[in-house]
Amino acid sequence: MTTIQTSVPDVTITENGISVPEIADVLAGRMTDLTAALTVNNPGAEISQSLSSPHGQIAMSDTEIVAQVYDKLLTLFNQINPDYASGRFQDGIGRIYFLDRIAGSGTVVTATVTGAVGTLIPAGSTAKDSNGYIYATTGDRTIPASGSVQITFTNQTNGPIPVEVGQLNQIYRAVPGWDAVYNFSAGVVGSDVESRLAFETRRKDSVYRGSRNQDGSVRSALLATTGVLDAYVWSNRTDNTVNQGATNYPVLPHSIYIGVYGGSDADVAEAIFNTYNPGANLNGNTTYTVYDTTYDQPQPQYIMQWNRVAPTRIYVRVELDASLNPPSDITNQVKQVVQNAFNGLVDGVPRARIGATISSGRLYAPVIAIDPATVGILSITISKDGTTFGPSVTMGIDQVPTISAADVQVVLS
Image 1: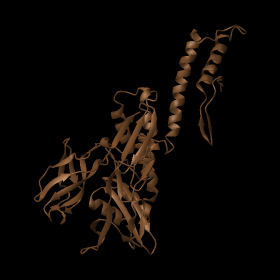
Image 2 (image 1 turned 60 degrees about the horizontal axis):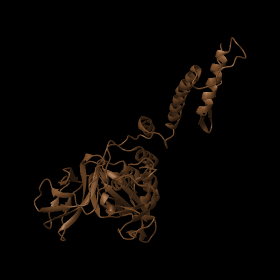
Image 3 (image 1 turned 90 degrees about the vertical axis):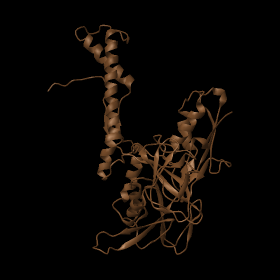
Image 4 (image 1 turned 90 degrees about the horizontal axis):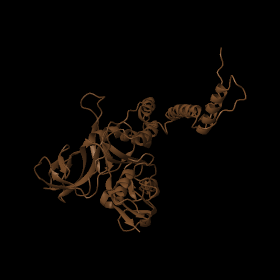
């Protein structure tokens, strides 16, 4: 068998992974090969090593071809790693866990509905925002003695469609006794298709998917439920009520706390029923009756309970160095980038979530990426009240963070 020799360094694959040679070494190897080929019948002849020579041009062209192959090889190897996989490769890894990428979700917003006391606002009741998008309620709600009730609405169009404060303000299909609707906080945006980072996060959480009676089991099932944008689950295993999280939410003894944002009542209740510890008490402001369909009539019924978490406005203050002459539209660009990073639309930056600490550090890289030459950050601070700013804020387990363009302040100093 003929052995073909080359001076181009080889790719090495070890237990530490794959390593490709530097492109400069590949070019040097091709120049050595071509020099040897041109002098095979005239040993000792001097051959120009200039890259502008004909064989230098050939060497550079060959090097670019090899470099492209090496790049594709590195990409292919990285697709095997769940931390870096994307697209169809990530879909394939998900199938190992019996997971499919969520096709899309609509923006979820909580609005105040006012009307006559005792009026039932049935699931599927619709309202329209100022941009013409239709939002539907996710469950039945009755207006109490106060004359108003907080109701969660989901955009019927999938995608990262923002709804700013006050934009959901029109009743689309009338319900007798329903007078008005208004959102005092921005919505949590949906997605056209589940992002790479969101899918990988859900895959990691899915290790609990086949289990029961664990906090992770319930959370994994909820995050896979249609329309659910976030969930938080925690069990109090003590004999006493525990004030949990930044807002000191009281969790009953020997009970499980389940906080959810988005999803219909029926779907959320079913996910809880199929995974929670049936011996534990429940907490929250929402109930729904689930029937055990494995029985003949009359079927046993169970009241599932969970907390529809409250949207909480987050304020961000970005101070930039004006002496670097940032772009004329820098204010709008920063507002958009901060919103994207906050909502998990920037690769590598996770969505701000229920009960989590939101650090300003996650925003530096996306803001600088607008234009590293002219965007200089002096500070980025965050607040929950728009007055007291600091490097981070922590959400309560009964709070889901929201942000709108109006909540992002850009200062040029």
